Image (tube, rainbow over all chains, first blue to last red; front, side):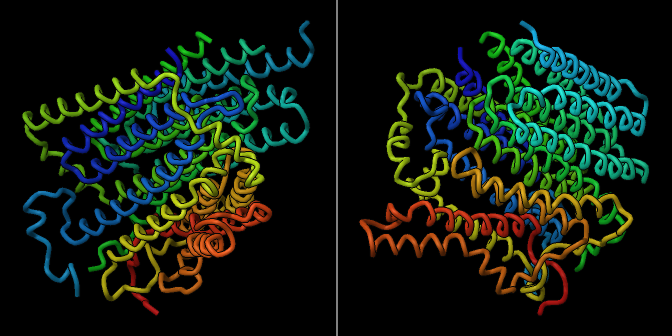
Length: 113
Length: 98
Length: 93
Length: 315
Protein backbone atom coordinates (compact mmCIF):
# COMPACT_ATOMS: atom_id res chain seq x y z
CA UNK A 1 0.00 0.00 0.00
CA UNK A 2 1.56 3.27 -1.11
CA UNK A 3 0.26 6.80 -1.47
CA UNK A 4 0.00 6.22 -5.21
CA UNK A 5 -2.29 3.21 -4.77
CA UNK A 6 -4.48 4.94 -2.16
CA UNK A 7 -5.05 8.01 -4.31
CA UNK A 8 -5.38 5.91 -7.44
CA UNK A 9 -8.31 4.05 -5.89
CA UNK A 10 -9.65 7.39 -4.68
CA UNK A 11 -9.46 8.73 -8.25
CA UNK A 12 -11.25 5.68 -9.65
CA UNK A 13 -14.04 6.09 -7.10
CA UNK A 14 -14.31 9.83 -7.77
CA UNK A 15 -14.62 9.14 -11.50
CA UNK A 16 -17.41 6.66 -10.79
CA UNK A 17 -19.19 9.15 -8.53
CA UNK A 18 -18.99 11.85 -11.14
CA UNK A 19 -20.31 9.51 -13.81
CA UNK A 20 -23.29 8.58 -11.64
CA UNK A 21 -24.09 12.21 -10.91
CA UNK A 22 -23.82 13.20 -14.56
CA UNK A 23 -26.33 10.49 -15.57
CA UNK A 24 -28.73 10.44 -12.66
CA UNK A 25 -29.16 14.10 -11.75
CA UNK A 26 -31.67 15.89 -13.98
CA UNK A 27 -30.40 19.40 -13.25
CA UNK A 28 -27.79 20.71 -15.70
CA UNK A 29 -25.85 22.64 -13.05
CA UNK A 30 -25.44 19.44 -11.08
CA UNK A 31 -24.38 17.60 -14.20
CA UNK A 32 -21.65 20.23 -14.69
CA UNK A 33 -20.52 19.72 -11.09
CA UNK A 34 -20.55 15.95 -11.61
CA UNK A 35 -18.47 16.28 -14.77
CA UNK A 36 -15.90 18.24 -12.78
CA UNK A 37 -15.78 15.43 -10.26
CA UNK A 38 -15.36 12.92 -13.06
CA UNK A 39 -12.50 14.88 -14.61
CA UNK A 40 -10.78 15.31 -11.25
CA UNK A 41 -10.89 11.54 -10.81
CA UNK A 42 -9.27 11.01 -14.20
CA UNK A 43 -6.62 13.62 -13.38
CA UNK A 44 -5.86 11.76 -10.17
CA UNK A 45 -5.24 8.59 -12.19
CA UNK A 46 -2.75 10.58 -14.27
CA UNK A 47 -1.18 11.82 -11.05
CA UNK A 48 -0.74 8.25 -9.87
CA UNK A 49 0.98 7.29 -13.10
CA UNK A 50 3.22 10.34 -12.70
CA UNK A 51 4.02 9.41 -9.10
CA UNK A 52 4.91 5.85 -10.00
CA UNK A 53 7.28 7.15 -12.66
CA UNK A 54 9.50 8.78 -10.03
CA UNK A 55 13.20 8.27 -10.56
CA UNK A 56 16.06 9.37 -8.34
CA UNK A 57 16.19 13.12 -9.02
CA UNK A 58 12.50 13.60 -9.89
CA UNK A 59 9.54 13.25 -7.60
CA UNK A 60 7.45 12.08 -10.53
CA UNK A 61 7.24 11.71 -14.28
CA UNK A 62 6.87 15.29 -15.55
CA UNK A 63 4.99 14.36 -18.74
CA UNK A 64 1.69 13.24 -17.13
CA UNK A 65 1.97 16.15 -14.71
CA UNK A 66 2.19 18.60 -17.59
CA UNK A 67 -0.78 16.89 -19.26
CA UNK A 68 -2.83 17.26 -16.08
CA UNK A 69 -1.98 20.96 -15.88
CA UNK A 70 -3.26 21.61 -19.39
CA UNK A 71 -6.20 19.31 -18.64
CA UNK A 72 -7.24 21.31 -15.57
CA UNK A 73 -7.23 24.53 -17.57
CA UNK A 74 -9.25 22.98 -20.40
CA UNK A 75 -11.74 21.53 -17.89
CA UNK A 76 -12.16 24.99 -16.39
CA UNK A 77 -12.76 26.47 -19.85
CA UNK A 78 -15.30 23.75 -20.62
CA UNK A 79 -17.06 24.42 -17.33
CA UNK A 80 -17.22 28.13 -18.10
CA UNK A 81 -18.75 27.41 -21.53
CA UNK A 82 -21.28 25.00 -20.03
CA UNK A 83 -22.29 27.50 -17.34
CA UNK A 84 -22.68 30.26 -19.93
CA UNK A 85 -24.91 27.98 -22.02
CA UNK A 86 -26.97 27.08 -18.96
CA UNK A 87 -27.48 30.70 -17.92
CA UNK A 88 -28.49 31.65 -21.46
CA UNK A 89 -30.93 28.76 -21.55
CA UNK A 90 -32.34 29.85 -18.21
CA UNK A 91 -32.85 33.38 -19.51
CA UNK A 92 -34.53 32.15 -22.68
CA UNK A 93 -36.90 29.66 -21.06
CA UNK A 94 -36.97 30.44 -17.35
CA UNK A 95 -36.35 26.77 -16.77
CA UNK A 96 -33.37 25.05 -15.20
CA UNK A 97 -34.05 21.57 -16.49
CA UNK A 98 -33.75 20.10 -19.92
CA UNK A 99 -37.24 18.62 -19.86
CA UNK A 100 -39.20 18.51 -23.10
CA UNK A 101 -41.65 21.13 -21.81
CA UNK A 102 -38.89 23.64 -21.19
CA UNK A 103 -37.34 23.06 -24.58
CA UNK A 104 -40.68 23.57 -26.32
CA UNK A 105 -41.26 26.82 -24.48
CA UNK A 106 -38.28 28.67 -25.96
CA UNK A 107 -39.78 31.80 -27.45
CA UNK A 108 -38.67 32.18 -31.04
CA UNK A 109 -37.48 35.75 -30.52
CA UNK A 110 -35.11 34.80 -27.73
CA UNK A 111 -33.02 32.67 -30.03
CA UNK A 112 -32.29 35.54 -32.32
CA UNK A 113 -33.66 38.89 -33.10
CA UNK B 1 19.74 17.67 22.55
CA UNK B 2 16.71 19.91 22.53
CA UNK B 3 17.46 23.52 21.71
CA UNK B 4 15.62 26.64 22.82
CA UNK B 5 14.33 27.17 19.27
CA UNK B 6 12.79 23.70 19.28
CA UNK B 7 11.01 24.34 22.55
CA UNK B 8 9.71 27.61 21.12
CA UNK B 9 8.42 25.79 18.03
CA UNK B 10 6.69 23.13 20.09
CA UNK B 11 4.99 25.69 22.32
CA UNK B 12 3.88 27.96 19.47
CA UNK B 13 2.63 25.18 17.20
CA UNK B 14 0.77 23.51 20.08
CA UNK B 15 -0.88 26.79 20.96
CA UNK B 16 -1.79 27.24 17.29
CA UNK B 17 -3.33 23.78 17.14
CA UNK B 18 -5.28 24.59 20.31
CA UNK B 19 -6.78 27.68 18.69
CA UNK B 20 -7.77 25.68 15.64
CA UNK B 21 -9.57 23.34 18.01
CA UNK B 22 -11.27 26.27 19.71
CA UNK B 23 -12.37 27.65 16.35
CA UNK B 24 -13.83 24.34 15.19
CA UNK B 25 -15.62 23.70 18.47
CA UNK B 26 -17.05 27.22 18.32
CA UNK B 27 -18.15 26.71 14.75
CA UNK B 28 -19.98 23.57 15.77
CA UNK B 29 -21.38 24.49 19.16
CA UNK B 30 -22.32 28.18 19.02
CA UNK B 31 -26.03 28.83 18.61
CA UNK B 32 -26.33 31.18 15.60
CA UNK B 33 -24.53 32.29 12.47
CA UNK B 34 -22.98 35.51 13.77
CA UNK B 35 -21.56 34.02 16.97
CA UNK B 36 -20.16 31.14 14.95
CA UNK B 37 -18.47 33.62 12.63
CA UNK B 38 -17.04 35.40 15.65
CA UNK B 39 -15.59 32.18 17.04
CA UNK B 40 -14.19 31.01 13.75
CA UNK B 41 -12.50 34.11 12.36
CA UNK B 42 -10.69 35.02 15.54
CA UNK B 43 -9.61 31.57 16.50
CA UNK B 44 -8.35 30.20 13.24
CA UNK B 45 -6.44 33.32 12.18
CA UNK B 46 -4.71 33.28 15.55
CA UNK B 47 -4.08 29.56 15.19
CA UNK B 48 -2.45 30.00 11.81
CA UNK B 49 -0.42 32.92 13.17
CA UNK B 50 0.97 30.81 15.99
CA UNK B 51 1.79 27.93 13.65
CA UNK B 52 3.63 30.37 11.36
CA UNK B 53 5.43 31.88 14.36
CA UNK B 54 6.53 28.42 15.45
CA UNK B 55 7.80 27.46 12.02
CA UNK B 56 9.66 30.72 11.34
CA UNK B 57 12.88 29.85 13.25
CA UNK B 58 13.03 26.59 11.27
CA UNK B 59 12.50 28.17 7.86
CA UNK B 60 16.24 28.44 7.28
CA UNK B 61 16.90 32.09 6.58
CA UNK B 62 15.29 35.48 6.69
CA UNK B 63 13.57 35.37 3.29
CA UNK B 64 11.75 32.05 3.76
CA UNK B 65 10.69 33.23 7.21
CA UNK B 66 9.34 36.44 5.72
CA UNK B 67 7.46 34.42 3.12
CA UNK B 68 5.80 32.42 5.88
CA UNK B 69 4.89 35.65 7.64
CA UNK B 70 3.46 37.09 4.42
CA UNK B 71 1.21 34.05 3.97
CA UNK B 72 -0.17 34.72 7.41
CA UNK B 73 -0.63 38.46 6.84
CA UNK B 74 -2.42 37.71 3.59
CA UNK B 75 -4.79 35.29 5.31
CA UNK B 76 -5.34 37.76 8.13
CA UNK B 77 -6.25 40.55 5.73
CA UNK B 78 -8.49 38.58 3.37
CA UNK B 79 -10.04 36.75 6.31
CA UNK B 80 -10.94 40.03 8.00
CA UNK B 81 -12.48 41.50 4.85
CA UNK B 82 -14.33 38.33 3.89
CA UNK B 83 -15.76 37.75 7.36
CA UNK B 84 -17.13 41.31 7.27
CA UNK B 85 -18.80 40.49 3.97
CA UNK B 86 -20.16 37.16 5.19
CA UNK B 87 -21.49 38.81 8.34
CA UNK B 88 -23.31 41.43 6.30
CA UNK B 89 -24.77 38.82 3.99
CA UNK B 90 -25.95 36.89 7.05
CA UNK B 91 -27.50 40.03 8.57
CA UNK B 92 -29.26 41.06 5.36
CA UNK B 93 -31.60 38.11 5.49
CA UNK B 94 -29.54 35.26 4.26
CA UNK B 95 -31.89 32.57 3.08
CA UNK B 96 -31.93 29.20 4.73
CA UNK B 97 -31.48 26.32 2.40
CA UNK B 98 -33.74 23.80 3.98
CA UNK C 1 10.71 17.23 15.97
CA UNK C 2 9.37 15.84 12.71
CA UNK C 3 7.10 13.52 14.67
CA UNK C 4 5.74 16.42 16.67
CA UNK C 5 5.05 18.49 13.55
CA UNK C 6 3.47 15.47 11.90
CA UNK C 7 1.22 15.07 14.88
CA UNK C 8 0.38 18.77 14.89
CA UNK C 9 -0.51 18.67 11.21
CA UNK C 10 -2.73 15.65 11.78
CA UNK C 11 -4.40 17.38 14.71
CA UNK C 12 -5.05 20.61 12.79
CA UNK C 13 -6.47 18.58 9.89
CA UNK C 14 -8.74 16.68 12.27
CA UNK C 15 -10.03 19.95 13.73
CA UNK C 16 -10.74 21.28 10.27
CA UNK C 17 -12.63 18.11 9.40
CA UNK C 18 -14.67 18.64 12.53
CA UNK C 19 -15.46 22.16 11.34
CA UNK C 20 -16.47 20.83 7.94
CA UNK C 21 -19.54 19.31 9.53
CA UNK C 22 -20.89 22.88 9.26
CA UNK C 23 -20.72 22.69 5.46
CA UNK C 24 -23.10 19.77 5.66
CA UNK C 25 -25.32 21.03 8.45
CA UNK C 26 -25.68 24.63 7.31
CA UNK C 27 -28.35 25.85 7.90
CA UNK C 28 -27.64 29.20 6.21
CA UNK C 29 -25.43 29.80 3.22
CA UNK C 30 -23.17 31.99 5.35
CA UNK C 31 -22.53 29.01 7.64
CA UNK C 32 -21.50 26.82 4.74
CA UNK C 33 -19.24 29.52 3.33
CA UNK C 34 -17.63 30.00 6.73
CA UNK C 35 -16.81 26.32 7.00
CA UNK C 36 -15.17 26.44 3.56
CA UNK C 37 -13.18 29.44 4.80
CA UNK C 38 -12.03 27.39 7.82
CA UNK C 39 -10.99 24.58 5.51
CA UNK C 40 -8.87 27.08 3.57
CA UNK C 41 -7.08 28.40 6.67
CA UNK C 42 -6.59 24.94 8.12
CA UNK C 43 -5.37 23.64 4.78
CA UNK C 44 -2.81 26.44 4.68
CA UNK C 45 -1.61 25.52 8.18
CA UNK C 46 -1.35 21.85 7.22
CA UNK C 47 0.59 22.76 4.07
CA UNK C 48 3.05 24.95 5.97
CA UNK C 49 3.66 22.15 8.48
CA UNK C 50 4.04 19.67 5.66
CA UNK C 51 6.57 21.93 3.91
CA UNK C 52 8.66 21.92 7.09
CA UNK C 53 8.39 18.16 7.64
CA UNK C 54 9.41 17.16 4.12
CA UNK C 55 11.81 20.07 3.57
CA UNK C 56 10.12 21.22 0.36
CA UNK C 57 9.95 25.03 0.39
CA UNK C 58 7.84 25.12 -2.79
CA UNK C 59 4.87 23.78 -0.81
CA UNK C 60 4.79 27.24 0.82
CA UNK C 61 3.91 28.61 -2.64
CA UNK C 62 0.83 26.39 -2.70
CA UNK C 63 -0.17 27.87 0.66
CA UNK C 64 0.40 31.34 -0.77
CA UNK C 65 -1.91 30.62 -3.72
CA UNK C 66 -4.61 29.27 -1.41
CA UNK C 67 -4.27 32.36 0.79
CA UNK C 68 -4.85 34.57 -2.26
CA UNK C 69 -7.70 32.63 -3.82
CA UNK C 70 -9.57 31.24 -0.81
CA UNK C 71 -11.11 34.69 -0.46
CA UNK C 72 -12.14 34.73 -4.10
CA UNK C 73 -14.87 32.10 -3.87
CA UNK C 74 -16.30 33.74 -0.75
CA UNK C 75 -16.47 37.06 -2.58
CA UNK C 76 -18.41 35.41 -5.40
CA UNK C 77 -20.92 34.26 -2.81
CA UNK C 78 -21.25 37.61 -1.08
CA UNK C 79 -21.63 39.72 -4.21
CA UNK C 80 -24.84 38.00 -5.13
CA UNK C 81 -26.35 38.88 -1.78
CA UNK C 82 -25.36 42.52 -1.92
CA UNK C 83 -25.81 43.45 -5.56
CA UNK C 84 -27.65 41.16 -7.90
CA UNK C 85 -30.55 40.76 -5.51
CA UNK C 86 -31.00 44.54 -5.44
CA UNK C 87 -31.91 45.03 -9.04
CA UNK C 88 -29.16 43.95 -11.35
CA UNK C 89 -30.93 43.97 -14.72
CA UNK C 90 -30.89 40.22 -14.91
CA UNK C 91 -33.92 39.63 -17.06
CA UNK C 92 -33.30 42.13 -19.80
CA UNK C 93 -35.69 40.71 -22.31
CA UNK D 1 5.99 6.07 7.10
CA UNK D 2 2.98 4.17 8.42
CA UNK D 3 1.49 7.33 9.88
CA UNK D 4 1.84 8.87 6.42
CA UNK D 5 -0.23 6.09 4.91
CA UNK D 6 -2.90 6.48 7.56
CA UNK D 7 -3.11 10.22 6.84
CA UNK D 8 -3.32 9.46 3.12
CA UNK D 9 -6.19 7.04 3.64
CA UNK D 10 -8.05 9.59 5.76
CA UNK D 11 -7.49 12.30 3.15
CA UNK D 12 -8.72 10.00 0.36
CA UNK D 13 -11.80 9.05 2.39
CA UNK D 14 -12.50 12.72 3.00
CA UNK D 15 -12.21 13.55 -0.70
CA UNK D 16 -14.71 10.84 -1.49
CA UNK D 17 -17.06 11.85 1.32
CA UNK D 18 -17.16 15.45 0.11
CA UNK D 19 -17.51 14.21 -3.48
CA UNK D 20 -20.50 12.04 -2.51
CA UNK D 21 -22.08 14.93 -0.72
CA UNK D 22 -21.63 17.20 -3.76
CA UNK D 23 -23.49 14.63 -5.85
CA UNK D 24 -26.37 13.80 -3.53
CA UNK D 25 -27.21 17.02 -1.65
CA UNK D 26 -30.48 18.60 -2.73
CA UNK D 27 -29.48 22.24 -2.61
CA UNK D 28 -27.28 23.35 -5.49
CA UNK D 29 -25.64 26.20 -3.61
CA UNK D 30 -24.54 23.73 -0.94
CA UNK D 31 -23.18 21.49 -3.67
CA UNK D 32 -21.14 24.37 -5.08
CA UNK D 33 -19.67 25.14 -1.63
CA UNK D 34 -18.91 21.45 -1.34
CA UNK D 35 -17.10 21.66 -4.65
CA UNK D 36 -14.90 24.48 -3.32
CA UNK D 37 -14.03 22.28 -0.34
CA UNK D 38 -13.41 19.37 -2.70
CA UNK D 39 -10.96 21.54 -4.68
CA UNK D 40 -9.08 22.46 -1.50
CA UNK D 41 -8.81 18.80 -0.47
CA UNK D 42 -7.64 17.85 -3.94
CA UNK D 43 -4.88 20.46 -3.66
CA UNK D 44 -3.66 18.65 -0.54
CA UNK D 45 -3.81 15.34 -2.44
CA UNK D 46 -1.59 16.71 -5.22
CA UNK D 47 0.90 17.90 -2.61
CA UNK D 48 0.89 14.39 -1.16
CA UNK D 49 1.57 13.01 -4.65
CA UNK D 50 4.60 15.36 -4.85
CA UNK D 51 3.12 17.13 -7.87
CA UNK D 52 3.52 20.69 -6.62
CA UNK D 53 2.98 22.23 -10.07
CA UNK D 54 -0.39 20.50 -10.31
CA UNK D 55 -1.24 21.42 -6.72
CA UNK D 56 -0.71 25.09 -7.57
CA UNK D 57 -2.97 24.75 -10.60
CA UNK D 58 -5.71 22.88 -8.73
CA UNK D 59 -5.57 25.36 -5.85
CA UNK D 60 -5.95 28.29 -8.21
CA UNK D 61 -8.60 26.77 -10.50
CA UNK D 62 -10.53 24.12 -8.55
CA UNK D 63 -11.23 26.00 -5.37
CA UNK D 64 -10.72 29.46 -6.86
CA UNK D 65 -12.00 30.21 -10.35
CA UNK D 66 -14.27 27.22 -11.07
CA UNK D 67 -15.60 27.28 -7.51
CA UNK D 68 -16.50 30.96 -7.80
CA UNK D 69 -18.06 30.40 -11.23
CA UNK D 70 -20.29 27.59 -9.97
CA UNK D 71 -21.25 29.45 -6.79
CA UNK D 72 -22.37 32.42 -8.84
CA UNK D 73 -24.21 30.25 -11.31
CA UNK D 74 -26.09 28.47 -8.53
CA UNK D 75 -27.15 31.72 -6.91
CA UNK D 76 -28.22 33.21 -10.25
CA UNK D 77 -30.41 30.23 -11.00
CA UNK D 78 -31.84 30.71 -7.53
CA UNK D 79 -35.05 29.19 -6.28
CA UNK D 80 -36.10 27.89 -9.70
CA UNK D 81 -33.25 25.43 -9.50
CA UNK D 82 -34.59 24.00 -6.24
CA UNK D 83 -38.09 23.35 -7.55
CA UNK D 84 -36.57 21.50 -10.47
CA UNK D 85 -35.26 18.98 -7.97
CA UNK D 86 -38.71 17.41 -7.99
CA UNK D 87 -38.08 15.97 -11.41
CA UNK D 88 -36.10 13.02 -10.11
CA UNK D 89 -35.52 10.26 -12.62
CA UNK D 90 -37.07 6.90 -11.79
CA UNK D 91 -35.54 4.33 -9.47
CA UNK D 92 -34.82 2.10 -12.43
CA UNK D 93 -32.70 4.69 -14.24
CA UNK D 94 -30.82 5.53 -11.07
CA UNK D 95 -30.11 1.89 -10.35
CA UNK D 96 -28.80 1.33 -13.87
CA UNK D 97 -26.67 4.49 -13.64
CA UNK D 98 -25.29 3.37 -10.29
CA UNK D 99 -24.49 -0.09 -11.62
CA UNK D 100 -22.78 1.35 -14.68
CA UNK D 101 -20.73 3.80 -12.59
CA UNK D 102 -19.67 1.09 -10.15
CA UNK D 103 -18.51 -1.09 -13.05
CA UNK D 104 -16.49 1.78 -14.57
CA UNK D 105 -14.96 2.66 -11.18
CA UNK D 106 -14.12 -1.00 -10.54
CA UNK D 107 -12.42 -1.28 -13.91
CA UNK D 108 -10.37 1.85 -13.23
CA UNK D 109 -9.47 0.56 -9.77
CA UNK D 110 -8.34 -2.75 -11.26
CA UNK D 111 -6.18 -0.86 -13.72
CA UNK D 112 -4.63 1.07 -10.82
CA UNK D 113 -3.88 -2.14 -8.90
CA UNK D 114 -2.33 -3.89 -11.89
CA UNK D 115 -0.26 -1.08 -13.34
CA UNK D 116 2.93 -2.42 -14.99
CA UNK D 117 5.93 -2.78 -12.72
CA UNK D 118 8.45 -1.19 -13.11
CA UNK D 119 6.38 1.80 -14.11
CA UNK D 120 7.13 3.28 -17.51
CA UNK D 121 8.53 6.78 -17.16
CA UNK D 122 9.85 9.56 -19.31
CA UNK D 123 11.56 11.26 -16.37
CA UNK D 124 15.09 10.13 -17.35
CA UNK D 125 14.60 11.54 -20.86
CA UNK D 126 13.28 14.79 -19.42
CA UNK D 127 16.31 14.92 -17.12
CA UNK D 128 18.79 14.12 -19.87
CA UNK D 129 17.48 16.90 -22.11
CA UNK D 130 16.95 19.56 -19.46
CA UNK D 131 20.21 21.23 -20.44
CA UNK D 132 18.76 22.01 -23.88
CA UNK D 133 16.40 24.62 -22.43
CA UNK D 134 18.43 25.90 -19.52
CA UNK D 135 15.45 25.49 -17.16
CA UNK D 136 15.46 23.25 -14.13
CA UNK D 137 11.73 22.66 -13.67
CA UNK D 138 10.96 19.47 -15.61
CA UNK D 139 7.25 20.22 -15.87
CA UNK D 140 7.89 23.62 -17.44
CA UNK D 141 10.34 21.96 -19.82
CA UNK D 142 7.70 19.48 -20.90
CA UNK D 143 5.02 22.15 -21.27
CA UNK D 144 7.10 24.71 -23.09
CA UNK D 145 9.62 22.65 -25.03
CA UNK D 146 9.20 18.88 -25.26
CA UNK D 147 5.43 18.94 -25.73
CA UNK D 148 5.13 22.54 -26.86
CA UNK D 149 2.70 21.56 -29.61
CA UNK D 150 0.17 20.34 -27.01
CA UNK D 151 0.46 23.53 -25.03
CA UNK D 152 0.01 25.70 -28.09
CA UNK D 153 -3.06 23.81 -29.25
CA UNK D 154 -4.45 23.88 -25.74
CA UNK D 155 -4.40 27.69 -25.97
CA UNK D 156 -6.38 27.35 -29.18
CA UNK D 157 -8.93 25.19 -27.34
CA UNK D 158 -9.31 27.97 -24.76
CA UNK D 159 -9.92 30.45 -27.57
CA UNK D 160 -12.55 28.17 -29.10
CA UNK D 161 -14.28 27.92 -25.72
CA UNK D 162 -14.25 31.71 -25.46
CA UNK D 163 -15.67 32.01 -28.97
CA UNK D 164 -18.40 29.60 -27.83
CA UNK D 165 -19.22 31.75 -24.79
CA UNK D 166 -19.27 34.93 -26.84
CA UNK D 167 -21.50 33.39 -29.47
CA UNK D 168 -24.23 33.14 -26.82
CA UNK D 169 -24.60 36.91 -26.94
CA UNK D 170 -27.70 38.30 -28.55
CA UNK D 171 -27.16 40.04 -31.83
CA UNK D 172 -27.90 43.49 -30.50
CA UNK D 173 -25.36 43.11 -27.68
CA UNK D 174 -22.56 41.92 -29.92
CA UNK D 175 -19.32 43.79 -29.38
CA UNK D 176 -20.47 45.26 -26.07
CA UNK D 177 -18.97 44.75 -22.64
CA UNK D 178 -19.52 41.27 -21.19
CA UNK D 179 -21.25 40.39 -17.95
CA UNK D 180 -23.20 42.59 -15.56
CA UNK D 181 -21.82 45.93 -14.46
CA UNK D 182 -21.11 45.72 -10.76
CA UNK D 183 -21.72 48.80 -8.69
CA UNK D 184 -18.93 49.95 -6.43
CA UNK D 185 -19.31 51.26 -2.93
CA UNK D 186 -16.17 52.87 -1.50
CA UNK D 187 -17.24 52.15 2.08
CA UNK D 188 -17.62 48.47 1.32
CA UNK D 189 -14.98 46.09 2.74
CA UNK D 190 -15.14 44.46 -0.68
CA UNK D 191 -13.76 47.64 -2.26
CA UNK D 192 -10.89 47.65 0.22
CA UNK D 193 -10.18 44.01 -0.54
CA UNK D 194 -10.30 44.63 -4.29
CA UNK D 195 -7.98 47.61 -3.99
CA UNK D 196 -5.39 45.88 -1.85
CA UNK D 197 -5.34 42.28 -3.00
CA UNK D 198 -4.80 42.61 -6.79
CA UNK D 199 -1.42 44.43 -6.55
CA UNK D 200 -0.20 41.69 -4.19
CA UNK D 201 -1.76 39.00 -6.35
CA UNK D 202 -0.16 40.31 -9.52
CA UNK D 203 3.22 40.25 -7.80
CA UNK D 204 2.58 36.65 -6.74
CA UNK D 205 1.43 35.79 -10.28
CA UNK D 206 4.60 37.15 -11.83
CA UNK D 207 6.64 35.44 -9.14
CA UNK D 208 4.94 32.15 -10.12
CA UNK D 209 5.84 32.76 -13.74
CA UNK D 210 9.42 33.58 -12.83
CA UNK D 211 9.80 30.69 -10.41
CA UNK D 212 8.39 28.38 -13.05
CA UNK D 213 11.76 28.19 -14.77
CA UNK D 214 13.44 26.40 -11.89
CA UNK D 215 10.84 25.56 -9.26
CA UNK D 216 7.17 24.56 -9.36
CA UNK D 217 5.06 27.26 -11.00
CA UNK D 218 4.79 28.65 -14.49
CA UNK D 219 2.69 30.51 -17.02
CA UNK D 220 -0.58 28.69 -16.28
CA UNK D 221 -0.45 29.19 -12.53
CA UNK D 222 0.66 32.81 -12.84
CA UNK D 223 -1.99 33.56 -15.46
CA UNK D 224 -4.77 32.03 -13.37
CA UNK D 225 -3.85 34.11 -10.33
CA UNK D 226 -3.77 37.29 -12.38
CA UNK D 227 -7.16 36.43 -13.91
CA UNK D 228 -8.63 35.95 -10.43
CA UNK D 229 -7.27 39.31 -9.29
CA UNK D 230 -8.76 41.05 -12.30
CA UNK D 231 -12.13 39.38 -11.68
CA UNK D 232 -12.00 40.54 -8.07
CA UNK D 233 -11.61 44.14 -9.24
CA UNK D 234 -14.49 43.68 -11.71
CA UNK D 235 -16.79 42.17 -9.06
CA UNK D 236 -16.05 45.02 -6.66
CA UNK D 237 -17.03 47.46 -9.40
CA UNK D 238 -13.60 49.09 -9.44
CA UNK D 239 -13.10 48.34 -13.10
CA UNK D 240 -15.25 47.12 -15.94
CA UNK D 241 -14.72 44.34 -18.43
CA UNK D 242 -13.54 45.72 -21.78
CA UNK D 243 -15.84 45.44 -24.81
CA UNK D 244 -15.29 42.16 -26.60
CA UNK D 245 -14.66 44.06 -29.83
CA UNK D 246 -11.70 45.88 -28.27
CA UNK D 247 -8.65 45.39 -30.44
CA UNK D 248 -6.15 45.25 -27.60
CA UNK D 249 -8.19 42.55 -25.87
CA UNK D 250 -8.19 40.51 -29.06
CA UNK D 251 -4.43 40.97 -29.35
CA UNK D 252 -3.88 39.80 -25.77
CA UNK D 253 -6.05 36.76 -26.48
CA UNK D 254 -3.91 35.60 -29.37
CA UNK D 255 -0.51 36.77 -28.08
CA UNK D 256 0.48 33.41 -26.62
CA UNK D 257 -0.42 31.09 -29.51
CA UNK D 258 0.73 33.66 -32.08
CA UNK D 259 4.18 33.95 -30.56
CA UNK D 260 4.32 30.19 -30.31
CA UNK D 261 3.50 29.92 -34.01
CA UNK D 262 6.06 32.54 -35.03
CA UNK D 263 8.79 30.83 -33.02
CA UNK D 264 7.58 27.48 -34.32
CA UNK D 265 7.87 28.50 -37.96
CA UNK D 266 11.16 30.20 -37.15
CA UNK D 267 12.35 26.81 -35.93
CA UNK D 268 11.26 25.28 -39.21
CA UNK D 269 13.20 27.87 -41.13
CA UNK D 270 16.34 28.14 -39.00
CA UNK D 271 16.57 24.81 -37.31
CA UNK D 272 15.52 21.25 -37.76
CA UNK D 273 11.79 21.21 -37.19
CA UNK D 274 8.59 23.04 -36.29
CA UNK D 275 8.93 24.42 -32.75
CA UNK D 276 12.61 23.41 -32.55
CA UNK D 277 14.28 26.13 -30.53
CA UNK D 278 17.87 27.11 -31.40
CA UNK D 279 19.74 25.85 -28.34
CA UNK D 280 21.73 29.05 -27.80
CA UNK D 281 18.58 31.16 -27.48
CA UNK D 282 16.29 28.55 -25.97
CA UNK D 283 15.95 30.07 -22.53
CA UNK D 284 15.28 33.70 -23.51
CA UNK D 285 12.90 32.55 -26.23
CA UNK D 286 11.01 30.34 -23.81
CA UNK D 287 10.79 33.13 -21.25
CA UNK D 288 9.30 35.49 -23.84
CA UNK D 289 6.78 32.85 -24.91
CA UNK D 290 5.92 32.13 -21.29
CA UNK D 291 5.32 35.80 -20.66
CA UNK D 292 2.95 36.03 -23.61
CA UNK D 293 1.27 32.81 -22.47
CA UNK D 294 0.68 34.22 -19.00
CA UNK D 295 -1.02 37.24 -20.54
CA UNK D 296 -3.16 35.06 -22.79
CA UNK D 297 -4.14 32.64 -20.02
CA UNK D 298 -5.06 35.53 -17.72
CA UNK D 299 -7.20 37.35 -20.29
CA UNK D 300 -8.86 34.21 -21.68
CA UNK D 301 -9.78 32.73 -18.30
CA UNK D 302 -10.97 36.08 -16.99
CA UNK D 303 -13.25 36.67 -19.98
CA UNK D 304 -14.49 33.07 -19.96
CA UNK D 305 -15.71 33.51 -16.41
CA UNK D 306 -17.23 36.94 -16.97
CA UNK D 307 -19.48 35.45 -19.66
CA UNK D 308 -21.03 36.61 -22.94
CA UNK D 309 -21.72 40.26 -23.84
CA UNK D 310 -24.96 41.00 -22.11
CA UNK D 311 -25.89 44.68 -22.06
CA UNK D 312 -26.70 47.64 -24.19
CA UNK D 313 -24.10 50.00 -25.49
CA UNK D 314 -22.42 48.24 -28.36
CA UNK D 315 -19.78 50.57 -29.74
